[in-house]
Image 1 (spheres, rainbow, N blue to C red):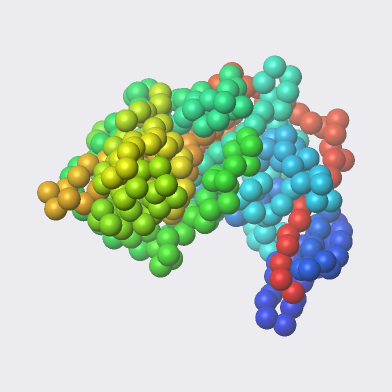
Image 2 (cartoon, rainbow, N blue to C red):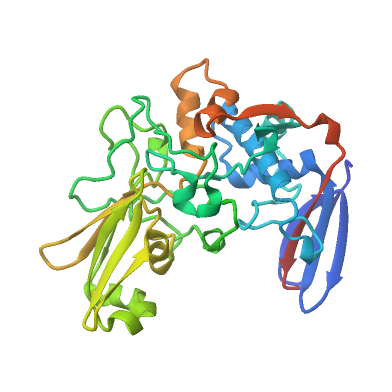
Length: 368
């Protein structure tokens, strides 16, 4: 248990791993790491949450991540392992970054999971909910779950407005958090997109601290507010998949919002006609690293450019990690239990000590 392995290739140095390694070669190298559940979490937390966050926020993620992997441990059964190491499941870096804060967050919550009505929950989480989390059914009909309800990420108890000042976005050289945190109940397409912008920075993000008082708990996120601007011809290229229905693109309008003020329906108009797409489809078309969430509004500039202003980063389903950090900082008495019960409605925290020997097989696929 205390020994680690390091995987090397002629061109790449991979992570160190503990436990048991199974290696097979098909048309690419497949490495399956079998290890104890708690040791698996040592490799998840440093990928999914910054070391600078409050301990209680880190503990909250440890419980959520433990619950998430157990609930979804059959996702890759057909592939011969339980979960992958990408955002399709949860990020995992092996034993390379087992820092003291990681061990503390995991060890202090050892064996604790989130349950509702006696069952493990889908403990989804994202980086920054933009001031309000979303109802599960607004993400997907299959996610209509009593514990995935929209909650305000604000001490006032009311969701902050989405509309932002009509000012250009300020360049912010800080990178986004270490992970996109896009875990969802069904492992949808959003899980498979990169967090980083093309040049490796988030130049279209506003720095934190520009929100009206009281600030959202997640206002400390470097991408809590963002702006993107497209010329019509540039947007037309992004929307080409719908050319067959509408012809040459002419205009776009956000026509329907959900309960958390996320774009639910977008009307596209062209020379041949019009059609509706979902906010998630628009985000996928523009790139999740550009349209960072669907909690957004749009306008047309005097020059005819389409301007989309938004708040948050990720789908906003379940726990907001920057919100957890802000909530933990708001009062000394706030605990990880308070954080979890804020974001997951009506849940209980239970022990899984009776299944403490459960193993998780985490896989990574790399080119040799």
